[in-house]
Length: 446
Ligand SMILES: Nc1ncnc2c1ncn2[C@@H]1O[C@H](COP(=O)(O)OP(=O)(O)OP(=O)(O)O)[C@@H](O)[C@H]1O
Ligand SMILES: [Mg+2]
Image 1 (cartoon, rainbow, N blue to C red):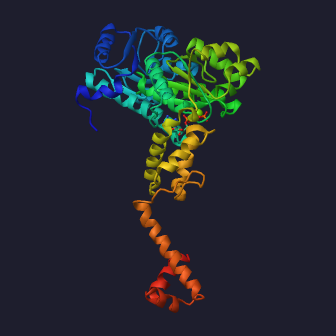
Image 2: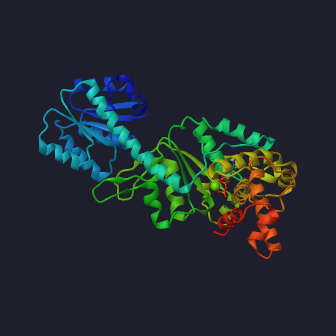
C-alpha cells in the first residue's frame, strides 16, 4: 500500500508517544508541528543528555534522533542507551549519510533513516512504517498466546438479577483506572467478566493480557513478565510491556510464588518494570485486574499471600454468582452454547425440550458455567444428552433424518439375523435387490 495522503496515518499514529532529539530549535519545531496533531504525545529535547533524563520519566513508542549534535552523535547515544535498557523504536534523521554510519545505525537497532532536508510526508511515512511494524510484532506475540490458550471472547450472558448486578457494577468500574478483584468459584465466569470490563473501558483498543500466576515456572517469571535483555542488547519484551496501555489480568493470585508477589508489589507501587539484565526501569501504563477462586483472607492468614499485596489487590471486589443460584440463566446459556458448538463442530443441534431444560435447571452445577458448556459440547458430539438430562421431546429437523438412517440399519440387520445371514433371502423379505444389501453392508462394515 502506498501512503500518500496525510489522513491515512491516523490509526497507527494516534496512540503513539514520540520523543524528538535535535539540537536545532527550528528542526525540533518542524518535527513537533508535523507530529503533534497526529500522535498522542510529542516531547522534544535539544541534547542527548536531556534525552537520557526523559527516558527515565516516560515510556516512548518512538524516538526520532538527529545524528550530529554538539553533545555527541545520535548513533553513540542510541548504542549507549541500548546497553542501559532502551527499547523504543528509533528513526535517525541526518544530513550526512555515509554507508558506514548507516550500517552502524542498523546494528544499533535503528529502524529507519530519513535524510535531511525532508518533507513532512517522508517523515510521516517512516514513522507510520516503524510503528506499524512495532504493533504488528506486539499483536503477533499476543495473538500467539491467545491462540494457544484458546481463550473465550464471548458475551457475558444472563438476565438474572445476580448477573444484572454484576454487569452494572462492571459498567461503573470500566472507565476508571482502579484495580478490580474477581472472586467466585471455578467456572463462574471471572475471566469472561474481566474481558468484558476491558472491552467497555477506554483501553478496549489496547491489549488484554491474561497471566495465570500459578502456571509460570518460578525461574521464568521475571523474564516472562518483565522481559529480558538478550545478548545483542535487544529487549525481548515481557508480557507487562506488551500489555502497555491496556489491561493485565492476573489469574489465580492466591497461588503467586513469593518472588512474584514482591516484584508485583513494586510494579503496582512504582508503575515501572525493570527487564532482566537492564539498568533502567521502564514506565508502564497498565490497568490491573485480578482473579481467584480461593479465599484471599485465608491465604493471607496462612501466610501464602502478603498482606501489603492483598490490600493493593482488594480495592474493588466483584463476586461472580454460582450457576445454581441463578438457574433462570441456564436456558439462555444452554441455547448459546448449543448454537456455538453446533456451528463450530458442524454438527446438528440437539433439541432443548422442556424436560431436558427442567433437568438442567435442577442440577446443582459444581463446575458452574464451564461445566454446562462442557456438557453441551459433549452432547453435541455424541448426538444426545447424557441419560440423566435427556428429555423425551420429539426429535425434529436434521436429527430426524440422521435417525432414519439408523432405523433402516437396525431393520436390515434384524432381518438379516432372522435369515441367518443369508443376504439373498433378506433382500427378498425386505423387497429390495441383493445389490442394495451388499452396498449397505459394505458401508456399515468399514
Ligand atoms: N455469563 C456467561 N455467559 C456466557 N458464557 C459464560 C458466562 N460465564 C462463564 N461463561 C463461559 O464459561 C467458561 C468459564 O468461564 P471463565 O473461564 O471466565 O471462568 P473462571 O471463573 O475464570 O473459572 P476458573 O476459576 O476455573 O478459572 C468460559 O468458557 C466462559 O466463556
Ligand atoms: Mg479463570
